[in-house]
Length: 284
Length: 229
Image (cartoon, rainbow over all chains, first blue to last red; front, side):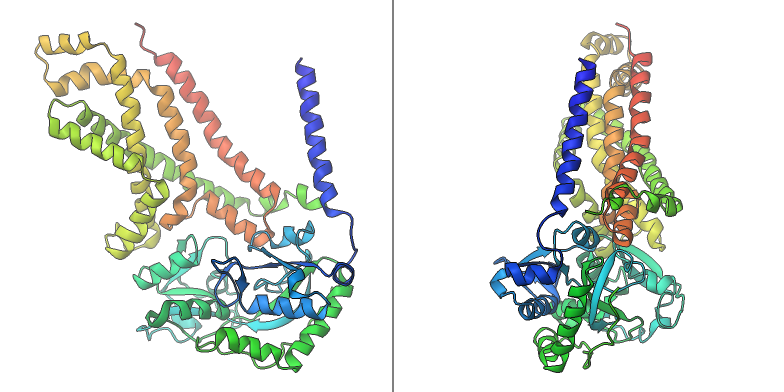
């Protein structure tokens, strides 16, 4: 009896592994091929970042990243109706790509050395900068070093705070700020308004979206201290698609679409928009 | 498909010091809250069996309100409501302040479960004992302290153990009270390394290292200290 039960358990485990392995196989070899043949793409975007990727109550998603995704898909021959958007959280972007659950990720996905071994990046299509969101009446924060001694919101599951306290910024400056943990950006903004923190920090594009939503009570400090190269994440090794998307990104900037899309989503937020295409990085 | 990610346990080794710090926070939260919840729960149960109707009513009202409020809301009320908005702080240092607010939230919540477990323990002590205590002239407090509660405690050791285990796992949401524990460290690692099964398994194992021995210890204590009737 005992032995039989163990056998059944092993068989079940085996079936699970077989099932998992089966998910990845089959179909086109590159995303470029899939776009051509099936006229369909699954694209991972953020659902919770106003301005970049935000899911609306009616089920549609909107934002700069979403429009970039539509532009790239269109140039690859996929109509808007053929795009399926999936929520890509910061924690699942790599595994989504590895397991083929999405064809590409366009979700404020910074190109970093740590991620390069796992993901092939096209782009960057935009150069964002980490900045600080502060209370509108706070005039004491004007640059990175003025963050010293300030209370900085540390969002659980995000690395933005490290760029301040561990010196991974353009000035290589370790700023001794007090970190106050919080579960998410909305909690941080509640804390900012009640003075429990002085600074909410992340990419200026994301902060601009929040600043627009919150109105006059908060503002972006306008003291950027990192370069965040937003790339298009692809399955590791899909160089053919990567090179093609790099060409499309070049066109997006030269034909004026990029500027138009930025204006559409960030006009009136105080975001200092980039006006030229960021220097392309090679595919690897 | 690339299966290497399924078995890559190296992030757990690389970040071992931070993981252990996370679990140390979990242990501190659990033990501090457990002690305070035990004291609060005992006071609450004394109120619930008191001869004064007002005390009984207050005890019952507290238990029913707090026990039926989600812990997340209790903690958010503590951190965002009382600490941030009302500016009631334990300390000027955010880490210390939010630690004690997290402990406060966990304690007032867990105390209701301790109270109800103890109340069921009190019900196992026969009425005759309380009557005998009254007959030899003990007051209500003396009856409770010297006769009823010692027996009640010994009969509810197992349920108290379950409450302690539940408390240890409830600490995983203290991030909403702005305090970092092992679960927050896990989320951080999901961002650094991607959300992989080995990281998840490592943390699940960490919690089991804390809770399984707790279960065994309380099972053994329950047997050893059972009241022979």
